[in-house]
Image (tube, rainbow, N blue to C red; front, side, top):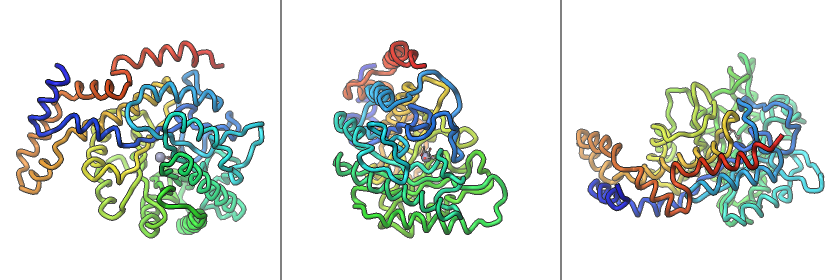
Length: 416
Ligand code: RNT
Ligand code: ZN
């Protein structure tokens, strides 16, 4: 089937495929740098394990070990990703030129100057994350620690990250979403559940007292249900994070990661619930298998449903980022397939007759609503996706993996 035949089929369902593709090109999606090196960063000893309740598993060869390698790998992946891209950095990816290392509370915009150059040359916006894990000053708590010295160190880090986020936004002329997540919690039944949360709240208050332009810097509070090694209690639970964001709507927004809820809960349904109150929200799109395992994002039902809600509620109100890390497969392919899958899910969502579906529901015609939704599933989506890749100047399905395999043979396999 040709693109034009597919276009006619969609038109019969009341959907304009050209308009959908144009709309998709304007929706920014943030590509997370940390898939490229298994969340290690450049500011701590790479032989030390990841902490904070997150884990990468696998030892596929070829992970990036230096900023130069990570940038080269990102370039290899970005070429394969259609659509409007942002880069998502963690503070631990600071680049210390001339070997002048700085601790996390002393990080400055200059440590991200090479990343700004990287983004400028590629026309990318940039998002940012303070790194409250994998560091000797995790005691193991950070912003919720009862140790005042520890807590002050991490508040200092948060404030430094606000300044860096403001710099990134100003340099790149696009808002910078700055996400606050800590793995603070306990393995077993706590003796005090309130204390850490009160301290966490005070710490975020202090971080957000650092001046920034809320139009440019979008601090987020990310919640979590539990992490490995912190199974019993998480300071930044769903209620904590959401309440913080709700009581500080002029300063920050809530962030939902779809790996951070009980397995029967779905983030797709939470999107309109939050948007009934918040002007904007942020998302980490991942794929949990039984827990927050951060598998590569697939073109699966829940990813599609999340994107349908984003499209229905207003794409300009949702900041979308990817957040997964698989160390068991080619990391460039992991980036590309996850990013392409999110683009597919967004495209599929844009190919829905949104107004008609709403009218059918409001008119009580649930029979027709069900039939329409089911028949859309077998509409010729693949032809529209191929055309979108063509118009975006990226390889179609079936054509990009050989390029990654070539890059692996030429570059990744030569890394020690
Ligand atoms: C961890 C959170 C957090 C991290 C990144 C690396 O469970 O999802 O967002 O994955 O900051
Ligand atoms: Zn996340």
